[in-house]
Amino acid sequence: MASLGAILLLCLNLLGCCDAPEFVPPASSLEAPQVRVTKLTDGFSFGVKMALLDDGRILLTEKETGYGRLVNAASELQDQPVADVAVNYASERGLLGIAAHPEFARTGYVYIAYVASTTAADTNTKEDVSDIRIARFRLTDTTAESPPRTILSLPARPGPYHNGGSLRFGPDGKLYVSLGELNRHANIKSQLTGNPRGKILRYNDDGTIPPDNPLGPHNPVFIYGIRNCFGFAFDPAGRSVLVSDNGPKGNDRLSQARPGDNLGWPLIWGGVDRWYERLAAWWIGRRFRPPLWDSLQVHAVPTAVQVLPNDLYGPNLTGRVLQFALDHTTRNTVVDLGTFLEGLPNLVDMQLDADGRLYLLTIQALYRVDPLTDAARRD
Image 1 (cartoon, rainbow, N blue to C red):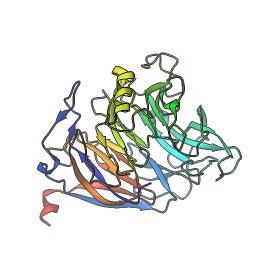
Image 2 (cartoon, one colour):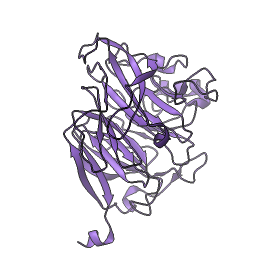
Image 3 (tube, rainbow, N blue to C red):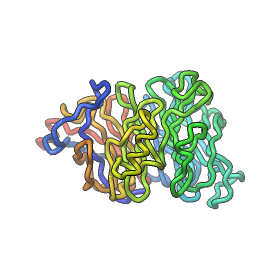
Image 4 (cartoon, rainbow, N blue to C red):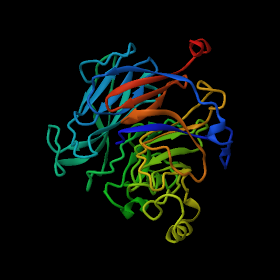
């Protein structure tokens, strides 16, 4: 994870585009948004991901305790966890993603992704690992109405690196799961469409496979050729997925992918720069999707990505992409970069509420980012 970093403003407009993104003048020509960052709460242990509920409550995961924590509408962290699972938290393992059902008000369902321990207790060894589980439980006001029930079992070996573990519900109401390639170095299984490793997977809300998946009715693979995706987001029009992918000490990248696309790993590390990457791109063919942004030699450690859905933060920012990275002094080949916020410690997640307001989660604290009103700017 990154120690200090910035949120990059990628000047790519994902609204109103069809087959090609709309390119705009360099970021320096855009007025920097003026914002106030407010710490809402802290006191949790090694936060990883969060889910915003429509009633103002926020759920978050703790990597090493296996706790799902609840922050109430008054921004108070509740003492008792709403979920507790036995995790293996060696290296990048642990309790990872969390997502609320799109009809949460009706179902009360919350989904979590975690690397399960082979014991009834949390463990920190490479060996005591069972699988990566996607589980769901029903949440009431302040407690879980039911214990987490596993709806999916995914491989966790060899590990303990590159588990992925991000969960999102798409505009289509389907559950999307990122699974890394589970190796510290390159593994060709990211390219094998019959293997879930190195993929974004698409499921129904009960863990079954939708019949309209791009690679067939019995295949959960939605996007493949991924190394380790800590975060992804859907464009507001619902036509593509923004995939944040960690490279091997550089070549971190952000890609805009359509159903069935191949992002190239491990045959292509970042942009198609080397002769063998050009050959691999030709071999992959029309399914290959090159990155929008590539950190090149800089180890940027991207962990989260979002698309601003409206003009809450400024009239020129609707549809712009926010990408967290450790170092923003990187060359880019397709889009221009600006800086939205700087000096963020250990940022692991970004989420937007129903109004388009940005929330930030670090491993230590939860923040809200509010646009300054005209009166506040004058003060």
